Length: 266
Length: 172
Image 1 (cartoon, helix red, strand yellow):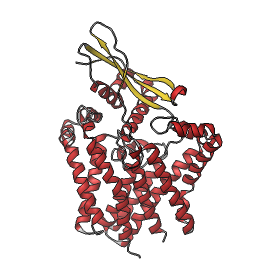
Image 2: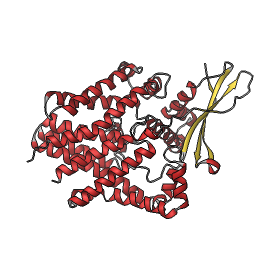
Image 3: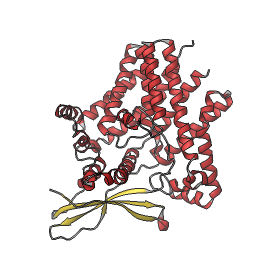
Image 4: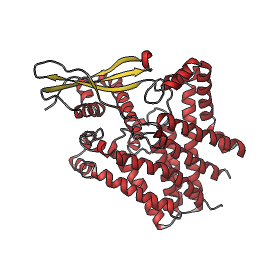
């Protein structure tokens, strides 16, 4: 069985760019996590009210204020450096990867799902699979299974996204693209005007996205040129979403899974 | 240990597949989603996000008069958002909150004795109330009411609709 360590390192480094950006974005926005900010613990702790008092006190001790989160984010950046610059399986790599998972779960619980985006679970899929395969098991079979797991999660995500769009009348008619682009949050006046005036362009864009997503699992069996084409479209797709909608972390979380797909199919 | 890891990965993948479809397992899996273990990625489907949500508020003054409605500013990232986007989580939080309140209104409120309390004590409602309360107040303000406004389109073709209107809440 081939040495899969380099594949894991490349996957984690690509995913790590997103982890670094996310940590820095949260750090500069730390005021939002103070008690007078949008994600103040004073409000988010309300979901703990039905828990026993000792658990509520533990929650407060772990999550109160913004200072603890700031420390966790700093730890996350240091842990990322150990992973990205280390050797797969080394003690520094193992500690760093463990800390990346623990800190990600901390952030998820702290924010209670408010502001959670689809790149978060995919980041945990990549780091969690690497941790289980390399740090916990450390065997070639587990390493191979970990990459297959990431590849399967990636294909599942795109397949589900494509099929759910294919079931939607708004996507099939092409109206969805004009609809999304009509918002300030995810669209722009110029692009909205462009696709609204050209329904066939809107229809073409909708069907391109749907078909590419729904057929993404072909990368597991297709010849290399097709696989590279599908990956190229994927990177272009995520770059477009990042440029237009600010969904920058998807680019790194999802394109890192392409490394796993390539590794298990070659 | 290899066997344990293989079983863990298989269970995680199975749960991820199950998480894409509603069923009796949904409640069980929601616990795992507290830790963002399970992707549910529909990427703007089946219903594309074709509205913007705006949180606005006004105050009731001591003499009973109401102040004009004001909007809580929404952060927007410029061209650098391809790499740096601090606003995306706020946009997502607003979508989650509105979807959460709509779900409560449709599925919980009809089956509880006090639907108003169920909504007003829910985390999505408290999240919005907390945000609305952080905005500066007039010295004589003593109650605040917030509203979610839905908009779509740009310029003269922009359409506006009322989404959610809260009760007035004391500011003390």
